Image (cartoon, rainbow, N blue to C red; front, side, top):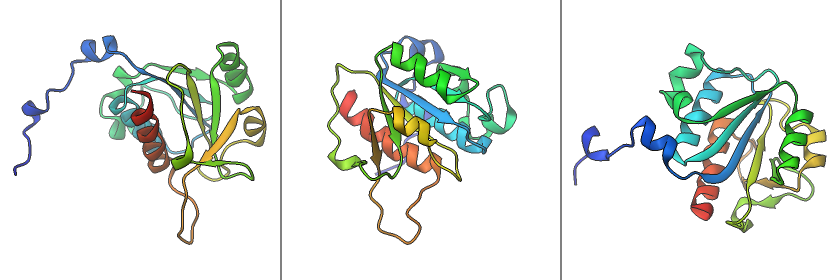
Length: 175
């Protein structure tokens, strides 16, 4: 066994990526403070061919060198949009019949492992602020909530780690 060389990875060009089919998933980042988290989610969205990233509120937008440190160019490949507030974001997505899912621990959240997705639907995943999580109003507007089961003492994950886990599950089911 040997490590593959970069040339052997057969990466898509930017044009090939933009033309390739995307999974029916929109990722919403609501009021993320860390630019490195934003960049990391861009990079993960690129890896799993996410349809679009929506940046909301205080979430920083490209071009930004701090986002670029972790995005490594994914701000060029992943389609993105900015909204001033989560209310306008959700209202816009509901008009498109997107099934909204808050990634949050709630009284009725489903575990990620029990999730069964429909390939005919488009989903919108809402990830919230690093400290306060998903806004309660957004939770109330969501079709349902999903959480990653955790058994440690913290019961929380960094938003970029959380998004990687959740996006992988959506990718597996929707590709």
